[in-house]
Structures are given as C-alpha cells and as structure tokens.
Image (cartoon, rainbow, N blue to C red; front, top):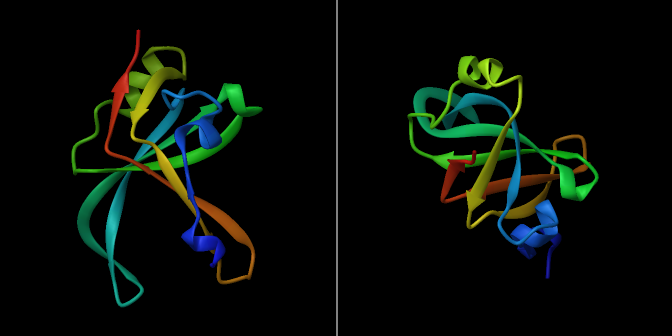
Length: 113
C-alpha cells in the first residue's frame, strides 16, 4: 500500500463530521494536459481554514466552473465565511521536491449563515 492510497475522511481533515470550515478565498482550477495547465476551468478551489483542526489551511477542489461565492462577497462578510463541504475527502501525494502534501476535494460546498 502506498501513502497515496489512503483516503482521508471529513473528520480527519476538518475534525468535524460535516467538513465545516471558514472560507478565505476562491480561485479557478484548471485542467492539466501533459503536465501543463490549459485555459479550461474544471473546478473551483476554495481555500479554507478548519478551526476544529488547529486552524489548518487546506485548498478544497469542487468540480464545476462557477463559484458559489466570490472573493468580493467573502470580503464583504468580513474576510471569512463559514462553509460546509459535502463528502470532503483527501489524499496525500508527493511533490516534485519530494515532500508530502494534501489534496482535498468535495462534491459541493454550501455557505452557512
């Protein structure tokens, strides 16, 4: 078994079963072909901090090309917005420099009041 075969649960990533965190920013995620980014947006990257997990910052990828919330809306709400990630999961991978990093994804994201 490789470390990349281990799938992390919402509880392990966020330290809460709902995968709830605080959104910090939003950006487009692009498709890669032969190791190079294309102009094709295939997912949205939500940078979140999980307060229940010692304020760990994680980028969560959600399929789609239209964000649920914009950076401007996050700023209007004081720079952070509570959100829940549906079916949050993660995997470790090895970077080009040989370090391990976490790749996280979710089926969807919902802004909470």
